[in-house]
Length: 189
Image 1: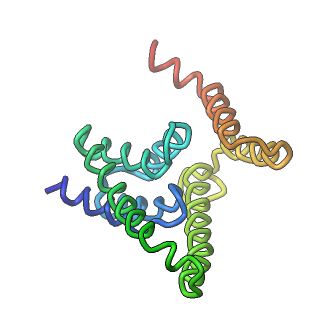
Image 2 (image 1 turned 90 degrees about the vertical axis):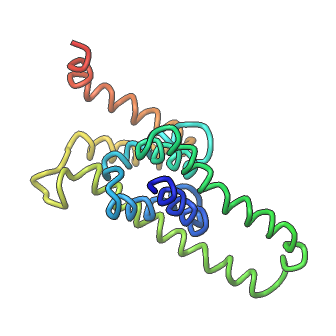
Image 3 (image 1 turned 180 degrees about the vertical axis):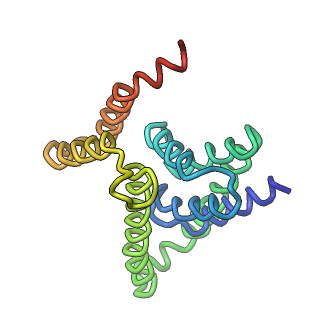
């Protein structure tokens, strides 16, 4: 039963997540709230790993989320479920694209989808900021100052240097490891 539910949820994400992998996050947050298959913190970690793993972010998150839910078969289930709608849509659209590519209504729909996808990604950005910087809610007494300083430094560096986002992910990962060496050492000793 969980496989069917997992498939249906990721199939739905595959149909409705316009705007790339980060646009899947509102659906994943809803899935976390509804089914408790993974926590927000686990979702943040899945997103971080998916961002630096080769391949589309949405597909990588689906694979990780499926694995977290029910193991390797869950990852296969979720990955196929999120891919199938795109495959069907691309095949269907490629057949009729030439006919409707200059159609006013087609252009209008695509034009309207852009700000909707941007709004979904912005909402996810706010939520990721909240779960990454604030330990619990938006309480100023519960701010992770190391994470906040790292965030501000990476934003400043990215605005100045304008490098590939992977560079900032790698810098953030290295800084995260260095800032948490005492926790990492505790795992081995």
